[in-house]
Length: 254
Image (tube, rainbow, N blue to C red; front, side, top):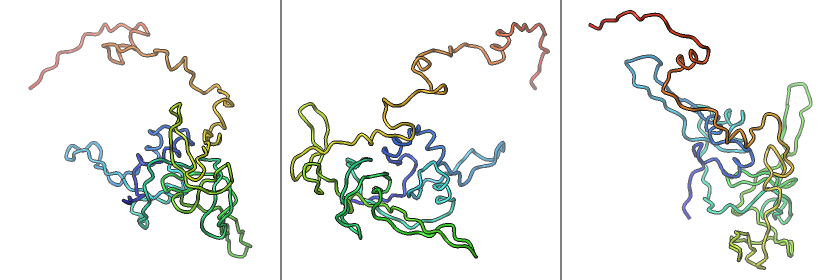
């Protein structure tokens, strides 16, 4: 199978990542933007040119976070890693999975986070490592247990709810045209958990309560601007009742 590098541009941020963050693409692209070189401003001797960084190192930090910016500094090179392209993403937050590798092999847990850019999932409470943090000279260091990511291609498997055993799955269509995940061993449907609809702003669509700063549908449909063949100054003068009575002096071109 053809492999592709994970060094991608802003347009390759995973759909699951953007869905959970509930952020527009314009904000994500603007947060990831890094200008490597730009021609001087207001200089007629140079054509306007801007060189931006196109390759990024994706990890456990979200693309719009400060950690992502620090790991993707201009001129900083990261080791090249290859990932297997996945056509249909089959893992969602809240899925029960079985770990296939490592010291927790055979154990089952719940998917807590997804990193679609690297084909990673974080299983709650499993596949952990002890890391030393906040180490200062003359003070006791603190050791923290941290969950490490697992590849969805060969390190975890979905659990069939009928027998609670790991299984391979494939996407099929029901008689009503609904696309579902089906266990290849038992033929049972593996439903998508309700946690898959959770975002940073709300647990579910029904439980979200609008605030005063939210944009309602009435505002979206209301027309607040009508184009006119007038300059900004002309519109201000008309609104404030200002009339121009001065006579413009003649100008000459040589």
